[in-house]
Length: 297
Ligand code: GUN
Image (cartoon, rainbow, N blue to C red; front, top):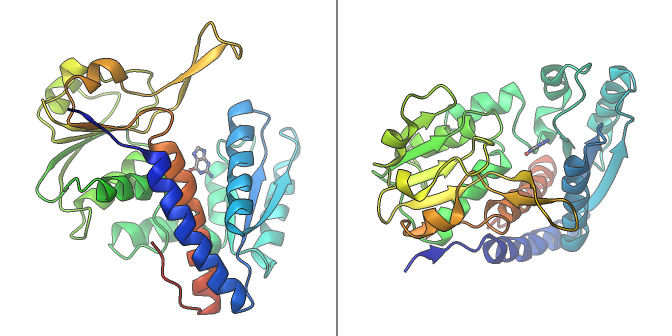
């Protein structure tokens, strides 16, 4: 029987523990605050940001949302970041990516105070993560680790293949999986768009994590019997639905399910975990800043 990894259930448990952390902080006089900044009219980005704000409200985090016109000068975004860096009520700042082409994405990431960089994308935080001293683990990789932990899928000594090398998922996740730490110690291979014979790599893996952004790239024929399959992909593909599209992952779910030992669905797998770990990083930022002890999940 293939185990279906229920990201909604695990995320819900984490959210309820985070609510407890928010309560502790609030009782100590600190309401954690998360600022989201959107400089885009991409419908998917708009949806992601509004879900993040909804999540804040649910757990008692003070959500602050700033929208900047996509054709505004980049200075407007940098001034917003400066203001949020200086705002004592803001403990976490998330600028939704991608930003428009005329805005220097790397400069945006560098402009965020590393202590408020709840994405974990600032070079200081990337360095700390690689060094095994993470301040904030990026939300999706952290969520994947929490899912593996919740389902008691041991990474120690396992052959893990990460398909995708993005700064947001592939690179940080591979770094976490190789660390001498819980949910680490995996023999990790990173595959990408230039990998020769991807199937040869995935078909020997105990754990395959698909994060390439290519719809249904990995199918059952590319997997080892009993492998754990974590699908990070969220791809909108044209479909005869009310919205005119449907969401599919980077994994061909039906064929992969017939081979895998455990698999995440899309939606309802990694997505809710990413959102939960953003709340986690926000309460961690507030706790660190005010030196108030909390018990994170
Ligand atoms: N766009 C897609 N994923 C992410 C994310 O994790 N953080 C930010 N800031 N933007 C994104």
